[in-house]
Image 1 (cartoon, rainbow, N blue to C red):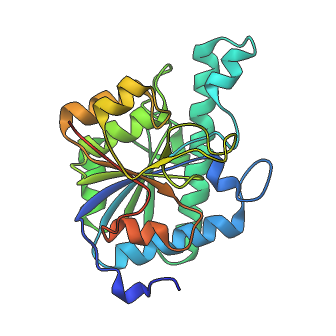
Image 2 (cartoon, helix red, strand yellow; image 1 turned 135 degrees about the vertical axis):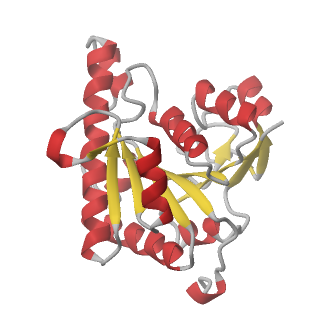
Length: 245
């Protein structure tokens, strides 16, 4: 039985949620699942109602991945710029999903895109958070060669988040790909050095190193299961908890 919403009291004051772009596809092969988007927005909205200040970074892998484009012969910088624009599309979709449910949200972009989103300014982001608006950080860091995982870690530190949540399509961090190996083992707890030494595919090395140096905890969990986002915000032990050394 899923836990009742009223039982999930928040354990953190301010969090950064990194949403996987691929997870936004739901059961689709491409793009965005409107049903899933609505469900995710509702969960995050309920966490906000309990007083949690929420920042978000969303990937763009459901639309375009810079690394994939580069692998097919495209210039990496150009491919990454296209990937950044894909994150803007997802961020605007998320903002719309929030607003349709009466949840105030703002998109702050690392790229200047005129009337579509506000430019990222740290002070502006903090002001929105203090006013209990959900802040969606788009376009990564605004620079090629940096992943949205690194952007999420950077933004988490800039807003003073208590923890970084990585919400994906898998239950946590495994010793190998659970989609390819049925006997893959889930790690309930790891530290940053273990991830780097074992080359576990959680987040890129730059993101993990940045989190380790700044003593930022990370929780990796499946956003598609039940009300896992609310459980994570409530401090429940789900997925994999990654701690600094």
